[in-house]
Each structure stands twice: as structure tokens, then as C-alpha cells.
Image (cartoon, rainbow, N blue to C red; front, side, top):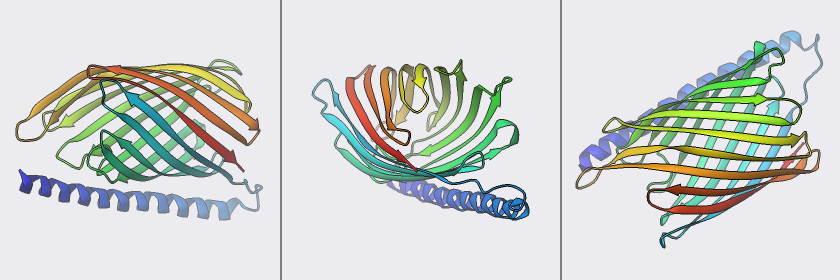
Length: 284
């Protein structure tokens, strides 16, 4: 068992390095293309200013049945050229179930004509359980309808734990801007876990009322089945249902400075979790 775990770990690290090289090639190629394109049109169109956003925040939650608490802190930074590209960087710390992890991740989104976007992200973290050895996300987004007010995205995720478990999944997200204030959202995921070929399905619905760059208030519900094979002295199939309710509120103190608040309540077969988070942000 130990030799097999070490072999899988080496394979996971090789896949992570290969993914980083692939991502670097993709991102550098996009940058070269962007540089070449900008050189050709710099005399024809005005320079688009960069937009930067920094976010800092944390969350806290308490489990039922004397299972303790959870907390995390994070720092996010993004830099974007509107309608051209966006870079996002994130780092943070998380603690739950007596496991502590430090995470780091980077993603790149390229915006193409006709409302199409391509995204690629890679993340990893320390700890024994709560952070994966690596996670790779790739997605494509498109805008529909006459006003491009229906946004759809399809994505693929590969996640490898620090043990033998891994998962491959696909997800679909829909966001519909009804008018200047109301926003509806829906999502769904289908994941296959190895070993055991376990299947996890999940979905979510949300509604938000907002006044642009002033305040937003909304609610969401997420539900699904979680299934995986726990590897140890004996294999144990873990399979349970989970439902999470969320309330969130965002306020802009100025057009570029504000905060986000969120309250969560999760209920599954093993515990209830009540928590919340706060995020401060600044854009320039």
C-alpha cells in the first residue's frame, strides 16, 4: 500500500509539473499573441487601461456534534485589460478537522470576439486532506441572446488528493441578467472519482438584486450527492447528501472600494455547519 501510494504521488507530481508547463506554454503563447497584435494595432486604437483588484478576507464556521470549527484567510489579486484578458492570483490558509493547509493558485482568462472566453487555472496546497496535491480547471464561456445577457460556461476539473483519490468532473453554469437589477443563476456538476468509479452530482440555484457599483443582495441554494472510496486498511465507501443555503450582501462604499458579506448553513448526513465570511476589496 505504501509503495503504491508513493508511486501515485510521483505520478501526481509529474502530472502537476506537466500541467504547469502546459499552462505556461498556453499563457506565454497568449501573451506573445497579445503583444504581436497590440504592436499591429497600437497606432489604430487607443490603449486600454489596466484594471487591478485586491481582495482580503476570511471565514469562520462551527460544526455540530462537537466536531469543532473551521476558519480560513485569503488574499486575491487580479489584473485585467477589459475585454482582452484577466490574470488572477490567490493564496490563503485553511483549517478544519485538525488539518491545516496553505494554498496558492493562478488562472488566466482570454476574451475573444462574439462573447467567447477561455480560462485555465492551476492550484495546489499543503496539508494532509483539505488541499489537493494539484487541481487543474479549464473552461469556455459564451454569451447568448440579442443583448448578450445570458452567459453560459462549460468546464472540466481534475483534482488529485495527496492519497490515491482523484476526480474528473464537468460543470455547466448559466447566468441570466433579466434587466438592470435582477440576476438569476443555475449550475450543475458531474464528477467521477477514482478508485471505485464513484459518481457525485450537484447543482445550485441563485437570485440576486443589485444596483450597479452600489449594493447587491442575494440568496442561493446548493445541493447534491458526495461519493468517494476511502482508502485505508480496508476500503470504505463514503456516500452522503448535502444541502447548503447562502445569503450574501455586497456594498460599495465608493465606486472602487467596498465589502462582501456571506452567511452559510450546510446540512448533510454527518453534521450541520453554520458560518460566514467577509471580504474587503479595492479596485484601481
